[in-house]
Image 1: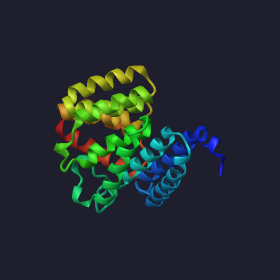
Image 2: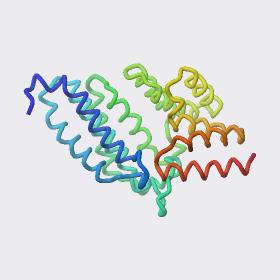
Image 3: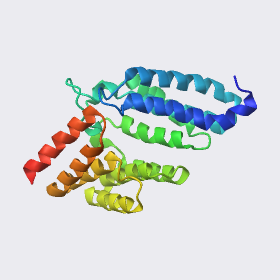
Image 4: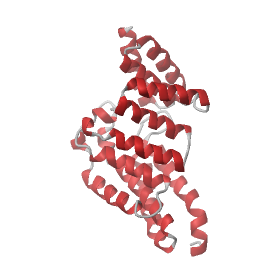
Length: 247
C-alpha cells in the first residue's frame, strides 16, 4: 500500500486506468461482442476497492472515487437492454427500461449524491449525467436541459472535443436537430475528431432527423470507414440502408 501522503497524487491515474478497463468492457474497441461483462465486473470491483481507501485522503479524492463507482454502476445497470437477441445494438432511447438493474441504479444515485458533496470532479459530473438518464422512466421523460447544463460544467473542468460532442447531442435532444448540427459544425472546424467515428455517426443521425438523407448517407459511410466494433458497424449499416432508401 502507498503511504497516505502518496495516495492523492496517484489517484487520477488509477481512476483513469480503472475507467479505461470499464470502457473496453462496456463498448469493446475490437471486433466481436460489443460488451465484455468480465471487464465491467473487474472494473467495478476495483472501483469499490479504491473507494475504501479514499477516506484516508482529502475529500476531493473520496468524491471522485465515489463518482467513478457511481458512473460504472449506472452504465452497467443498462447492460441487459443494450443488445437484442442477435447481438445487435439497441439505442438508449429504444431500450426496454424494465430490463435495467434498478438496484444498481439506486446504489449509483446514492453514490452520485455522495460524490457531489465534495468538490465536483469529472467522474462525479459524468455520473450525475448518467443518473439523469437512469432516473427517467421513459426516454421522453429525460431532462435533456439538465444534461446540457451538466455537460457545460464538465467542459469547464475537463474540456475535450469528445465532451463537446456529447454536449452537442444533448443540445440536439433539448432544442432540436438543427441546433445540434450547428454545434457539430462548429466542433468540426476546431479539428481533432475527424478520425473519430462517433463524430460522423452523430452528424449522420442529426442529418437523418432533419430529412437530409443524402448528406446523412455520406456521414454514415465515413463513420463505417472508422468504426472497429462489429455490433456498432451493423447498426451503422442498418441506418445507412434506411437513409439510402429515403434519398
